[in-house]
Amino acid sequence: MKEKEILDAIKKIVTPYTQRKEGLENFSQKTDFIKDLEVNSANLVDVILDVEDEFNIEIDNESMEGMLTVGDAKNIIERKLASA
Image 1: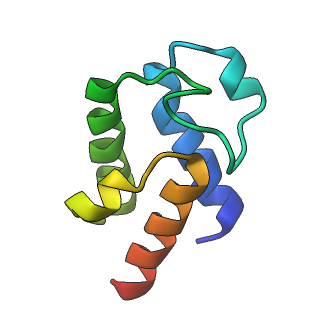
Image 2: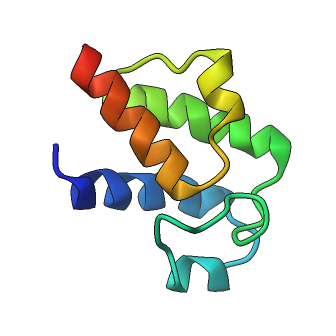
């Protein structure tokens, strides 16, 4: 799966949970889920569950804690897909 496809899928997943829509206009690997998109912590769990479903992977607690930005999420997804 290409990097752009992963980023597009992440954007699609987080959009319904985003409180600050302006954050989506500048969506990049540096986008912070909490600071830039204002996704609250309860919805962040939903984002992770949706990512797991979308990519058919399982994200462990350690990886979950490190998933603060879009780039972090992309790297975790790529790692999980590579080891699947």
